[in-house]
Figure 1 (cartoon, rainbow, N blue to C red):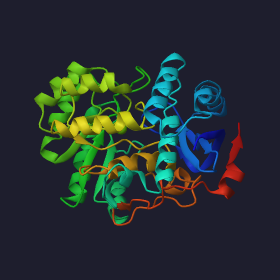
Figure 2: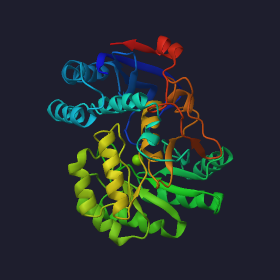
Figure 3: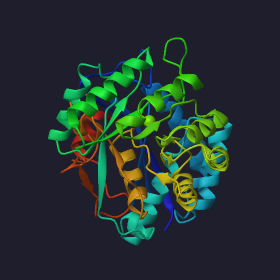
Figure 4: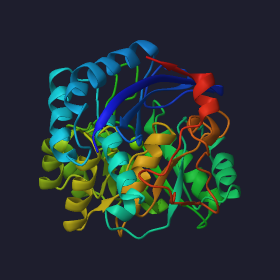
Amino acid sequence: MSIAAIETYFFEHPLARPFHPTWVPMHEQTANRCLILKLITDDGLEGIAAASVFSEEQARLLRFIVQDTIGQFLIGADPKDVELLAEVVRLYGFMIGGRPWLVEAALWDLVGKMAGEPLCRYWGGARTELELYASTGELATVEHAPERALAARDAGFRAIKLRARHFDYREDLEAVRAVRAAVGDTMRILVDANQGWTLSPLGVKWDYETALAFCRGVEDLDVYWVEEPLHRFDYDGLARLRAAVDVPIAGGEMNQGMHEFKVLLEKDCLDVYQPDATLAGGVSVAREVARLALARGRSFSPHTWTNGIGFAINLQIAASLTECPFLEYPWEPESWSPEARDAMLTQPFLAKDGAISVPEGAGFGVTLNPEAMGRFAKRL
Ligand SMILES: [Mg+2]
């Protein structure tokens, strides 16, 4: 079996309400936009993956990298040569950029479909359900944060992630305190400061002292982890912070490649490693980081905030492991809803009692919705 054709689509599905993610200062997101990649074999199997983009122009640049450069190595190749082909992807990721990691994911989707198994089973895992945390994406005020947490609890979640992004970190502390007072001991609380990349002075940039003060400030609030309290390349700062505080430190969603994760692991920067297979350099990178983290007694919980296909990819990796405390479930029901996030799929991933069933279909277990593709996708 070999790859016979490559198709790429710009997918753009409007959101019911504009979304203001804390991690992109001054940005208003009005649609779920991504490049969808199909690798089609000579006997008709389709390997599917996706990458988030800001615009059709960015999708066209990524299409050029994926189809016109990497694509010449894919046509005629056996999808099972995924290790070799992933090296080609990393080479072009280095030479041109653009995070073309969706190519390796689409290859894995084919490998799973050739085997007739969900990838988590193919990789030897046995989990059929994963507990989720409701991952909010917008900054909640001190007044609004408790009602948001209670809404998540009413929706069945037993864990919520808040964003810390006030200009004064003490307001973030107040918001966490207000949420803890509202939910008592009925929910886990996670906090994401999104300092992995910052745009100072437009954004909010924490220095070491601020990160330390925030982490110490939540120590009596039973916070499950503080995520990205410092820049993703501040390895020494992260290691120093982790050693200085009791609250677990999470991060790594935007670190790329084993060479960066190697430093994070060697310096013992994090308690929870969060590589996203669609952002961190590929499925193989995310799986390897997970194994290395678990081997040294650290935890793994992948970032998933891209789109329904990206969620499915990271879900299969998490389900292939014996340990993954919670899986991130993007949750802004009025804007970044499951229906908008997963609009390209035949079925959205819907949480039930704060958990998600692992799809039983082969590969990543997701199918493109022909009606949605007809309406919202443009062949590039
Ligand atoms: Mg994060």
